Length: 537
Image (tube, rainbow, N blue to C red; front, side, top):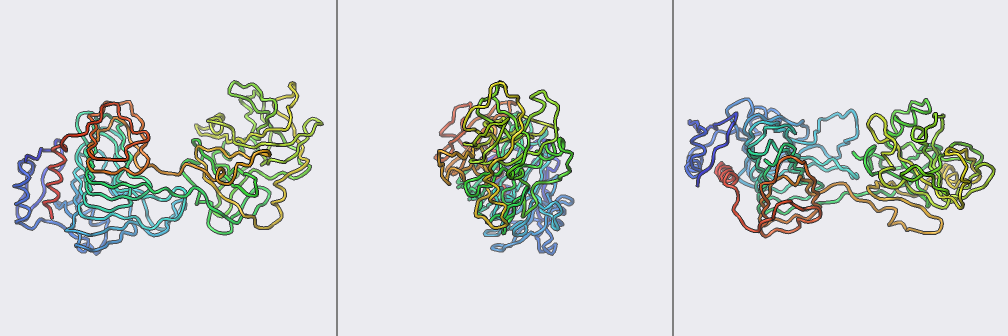
């Protein structure tokens, strides 16, 4: 069969023993090339040649005529320390079978701002050159990760989000728990072709494929079994409270740290003895608390302890806001603990937000009120009603009282605490509870309704199996997609087609704008590249 040439390649030749195979010869016939490669020892390097120094071995392939790293059959390699390496020319990592590379150190702390060992998320950065990269007969594994709601999932490939990348990237005959890649199209006409063949994956995220520059991103999947593994969303802990912090006696609040903190429809909370405490993100502290109170708190997550809005004690007085709907109309029986001074058109007054609970009793303008329901502010107003420095900075809770406030009462009121349920936690003892990552979920406590523990612990876990733009193209055969398929659109270019042959699991948001075919051949360029890689061993 004919193997079509790649255009605009910066590296149009590889070396076979005593012979340079030029681009024209390489793509004339895969059978001719295969015979040549099998009858002559291909020029390659091994990791043993570099005393197992991964970085130096990869650099050598990018600075010399050699493009092939050959691993010993059946051997397991460990690359403990690595940084993402930029590729500017061909790279082929091959084995005759059953080789493994494990990347990273076990239990790496991704939230440590000063790590002692280099651990980037992705192994290779393909930039925007005309890529030809293949991994054959090699299992790619991640080191053991810490149990967290957002584990440090490692990935193989990423590239530039800017234009012009095309080429071929392949992973063939591999068991892996690493993400295939975060990859962007280079345009509409010239394709970047991604090949996944005989791949077994179990992990957090498999692929994020973005057609930012048009529909020139084509995915080939054959004989793949892909399974999404959900990380935990909560941890049971022994907790100790002080006025404005909570401490765990084992583990860390880093276990529920995540990239959604300070953005999006998410929150981290503590649930203990029927009470909820929001764990404010640093954006709230920087953009709201410090700004209005002249404070200088730098972070809220301190590893084994976390800042909380202070637990009020009996006799304390502070300010709260009447709650309101999306039109700004006050809701008679509702209060908020965060005051949006700008929205209300009022000059700000220093005032520290408190943590209030169901069963707390308050005095407002001489009248007593009982808090019957607590919850987060509904919808996007929870985080984005109040923004500063382009960041979500609100994170308010709402409290339903046992009776309406007077209609003529101002929007900001002074409250006095007559009874505080949270005060019982300030006894210096450990209390059993949960630290929880809540994503797209409410966390209401209600005096009249027991929602149950399952409700409070419920959350959407971090991760999706595929998160792709609909403008990509897909050809898949004998592939099981056992996990969530999230789809969005770039608005750039058009898909060149979808084909699913004897596949399952492509559901959820999977909804191409073009008809999905049930038959059709694999793209010639992809098949030719697979033949080429197989001939290397």
